[in-house]
Amino acid sequence: MATVIINWRMINDGLNGKIDMIWHITWLQHFSAQVYEGIHYPRWLAGTNYGYGSPTFVFYPPLVYYLGTFLKSFGLNIEKTVIILYSSAIFFCGLNFYIYGRSRWGIIPSLAGAFAYMTAPYLAFTTYWVSSLSSLFAFAWIPLCFWLTEKTIIQPRWGIGLTFLWAILALTHLPSLLLFLVFWLFYTLFLFFNSSWKVFLLTVLCAAIGLGIVSFYLLPAVLEKSLVNIEVMKEIGGGFQVSMLGAANNPLIPLKLNSRPPHIFVHQSLAIVVLALITIVFFRRDIKATRETRWWFSFALGLGFFMSYLSWPIWQVVPILQSVQVSFRLLFIFSFVGAALYSVVTKGIINLQPKFKYPLLSIMILILTINFSFDYKLSRRFPTLNNPGQANLEHLTEVKTALEEPYTDKLRDVAEYIPLLSNGKSPDAPIIGQPRVSVIQGTATVEIQSWNSYQRLLKIDAEESSTIRIRTYFYPAWHLYLNQVSYPINVLSDGTIGFKLNPGSYVVKLNYQHTFAFIVGMIFSTISILLMIALWVIEFKFNLSKKII
Image (cartoon, rainbow, N blue to C red; front, side):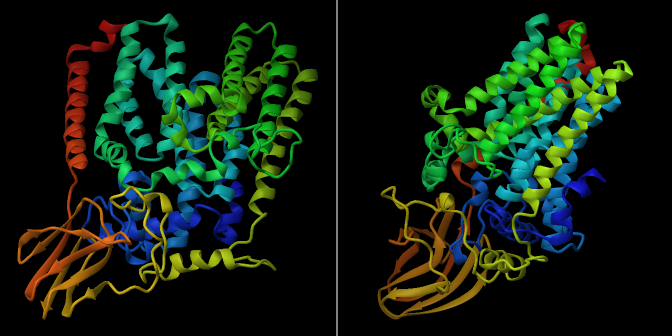
């Protein structure tokens, strides 16, 4: 019910088409179509970039799109599928926070914290402004990861669940994975001050095996990034440095109440400060509550520092962290900390005398109300497909195409995944309406016998020496065969596949195959799965948990 209320605008009025929405719809349409075509892991999307294609899922995690493909298999249209996915992510944010909090604070405080997490301003910003579906699912896994980490400390046999969760997080959203991994290591190290170092190593090993299991995705994503225009991501928002909180593009003073990251940061920070003050004033004799509040508040201060312009020298020392694009992505952990504090304070209020309890409960309800008001206003800020009002819907034209005509070679893909030329430069933007195959030099007759996502079969009769162009971006996974014999590909100036023919008749086959990085990744994934099975067998056969503890 809470999910429906929070996401009612999208459920009732449809999608708003902001920022990343077009990409998620496009990707889900083509990803699912290729799965139904028999391609179990579609790494190359053949129909995007106006038919030139893109190695999108070499670099972008596929889990959410498998979920969408599963939903579409029940006959749901694409818009309903996407709305269910967004709503499911919000639901799992609340459910997983409740699972995390119930063992720490009890039923009512954990429910209160779950509502605080579901209504966190940054979650609404991600849903309605950025429309980042994968980021939203990453938020949902964070509480579960904290929960399984703490369970593994007490009973190492829970490490199997932690292993799977790290694999799931890696297949959900890479920037969130990278940021969370850094802070999770500090969090885990802090928890082990009073525990065995062997437990710490086992917990870290579980995370490492989880990441190893998805090497089939992670290794190509890392090793092949030099083949695409991934560096363009550094220019988003004017660059990493200027987009930090307090910098030129995101100033905190003067603060603009425009629902952007500085506004969200201040909003969430004020809630955290109010919650901490309640603990200091009313629960100062509750040693457990004050200690836990100090811990969470210190965590929030650390996150705030790393989002601010003051931490730029640290980000500069570790360039790989800048691949997350913007430091304010840490707001998703910051929001989790705020929800945790909300649960701590709620638990304390329950045990207070009525003269203090009810005024403080009013403050807690006010915090949730302000959160919901933020979400409500932001959700209604933009026109939607089913309720445009008087707005200009030009920005929704491409969304409508993705919904209604996804396979007509009219859809773009993101610029960062366009394959680079041999000189390291990006080719010119793809041109809509280009023929699948064309003769750019000489005279030849071309018959397209089949044109599938991963295989194209042509029959060509060349009357003279000719150069043939196939409207497909070159990527090392593409291999060309003439009369069943491997043949070299010439990359044309626009980045597409070309080849030269002498006079004669040819059967031409173009196949998308596994790259070396993918094969190595599959080997590492297999080894990691065997390691996980070995640990599981050792645990249940020799009772490893008791020996470690």
